[in-house]
Length: 517
Image (tube, rainbow, N blue to C red; front, side, top):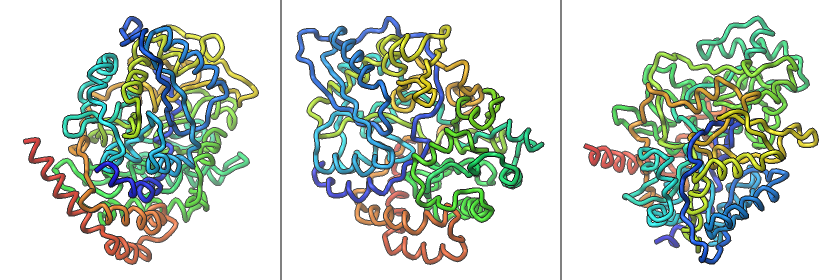
């Protein structure tokens, strides 16, 4: 059955888009435990080399750091050697798709739940069952990843991924705003979407930088990927979420076609206003992630959906900026806080891996001690960082590397809140609080752990993904006017099989809800 899905990978995986939220944040976390944790080892075992695929650009000192990582793995008797393979963000989907569909051998790859959930790979027969490996070699994974989060990586009682417990998922629904830019323009913090647009127009008019502070994002029609979910708190129907790009689900258990809802129309209307008023890049439909990242790093931005930014970037536009000049805004902050997913990112083992146990051993080793974690995430102490108290670190910056450290791992790929350190001098306090502190008032979406299996509608599901990228994305991004473009786009979606896919989703979701009773 696993091989029978291979032909679908090229069509489906290449259609997903890469949005900043799945990319590593600029945040730096905390840690104070795990130093004496055990790690499974067998010094007599032959060392196995694994290949680990991740999106992004290889840090300058990656090879030096992972030489040390592999030396430590050997010294600890883990029997694993790791080679990380960095794939550029704009090529990630295509390259990963090709390697999975052709059966190319590798052993671990990064999964972004808010973009292409692990269940999508599972449904195409692309994932290995790692339950036995976790049971045997995952002592530290089970210790440092809460059960309710780890359970989100199960299908039919078996593990097919390892979550990265690096973020409070209830952070979905807020955005970052530049307080220094508000002060510069004598503006108050906006409390509604209309106030946000009005403030943004003023900022755009008065901007002193060399590049306009457009909304930094690539194009998509999924509000969870884009973080246009910031708007949803202003709707009377909230709380609800959008799952797997196509399905609106509220807390009453109602599931329906997302693009046919009034909420989709309202989102599209907001984005249309941004576009027509020149607040989004006129080339937004063809923007690459690298272009978005460059804008954020330049400091020439006013609003960022989701969280991000760093003091280093802010100072490029405003040399007087401080870490308190990025604020977090929630519309209707008195409303409920919803976790759309149990976990946001993780790692999975492809079905063609010859070394699934080795992949699990490596992930477990990173959480076996603070020393291991620090090496993999922050690099070599004294070369790439120095400790700053119990929970902090100071990156050692290189003027020839854009004043960044020559090595930095990815919180979103491998982070764990029990070990994460903060850059106390330049990380953003408001973001740290939202991202890394549990929200006691948050609740999980009723669909957070639901896994949709498109097997019965695989042709239609592939077709609507393709059609939505072509017909729905321009409407949702505001490039095309909803009233003029949507009727024809919906007709194309229905011809592609939308109604059949939605009906199958509703059927499976109801069965899932019934099983929970």
